[in-house]
Image (cartoon, rainbow, N blue to C red; front, side, top):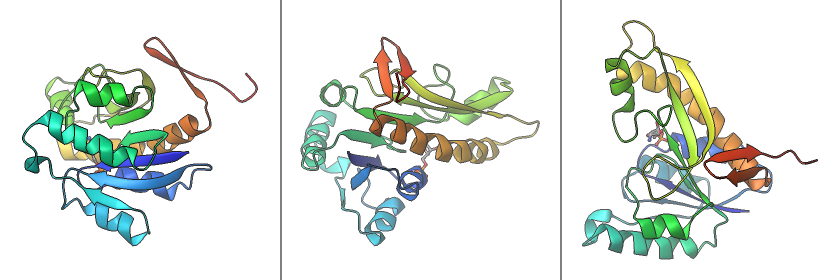
Amino acid sequence: KNIVILISGRGSNMQSIVNANIPNANIVAVLSNNPDAAGLAWATERGIATAALNHKDFASREAFDQAMMLLIDAYEPDLVVLAGFMRILTPAFCQHYAERCINIHPSLLPSFTGLHTHQRAIDEGCRVAGCTIHFVTEVLDNGAIIAQGVVPILDNDTADDVAARVLAVEHQLLPQAVADFVSGSLKIVGKRVIKRHQAD
Ligand code: GRF
């Protein structure tokens, strides 16, 4: 299966997918809206095709997404992974990749959609934080949930402390979710994702 990964920065989640050497998962491109994303250089060094489309060069969100879709589709992806991709996507983009685009979000959805999730969880007095991998729909951070991981929030934690604890879990769950998608184990039933076993 062909996989295109979208990043905006460091790309540690992208690295976790590449490093997992998932059977039948061919990472055909790493793309970014940010030409300076550190993860692009990392992928290039490993011989993976990379490209950046700077969203600032486009007049509208729609124009950027249309260009991104053309770029992505040139790689004939079976799956598009948003791995720290920090742009809100248009309905046209989300519909085009319906049921073949997944996102990792650093909160226990449906709590804390959007930005600054860990600080908001601390401010609310939450005792746990986490991450969610979900299918992308046109409603932000709202598609069917594939996997979630939980970590404690400890007294005196800063948002950075929580982020580091959650990130370690992200690096476990995201490659697993990609592997499950590639092996055909994920079935979307309404808002839920059922994990099929090979024998089912
Ligand atoms: C991750 O925590 C992701 O959940 C969030 O931004 C961070 C990206 O990190 N949206 P990286 O670029 O994968 O290292």
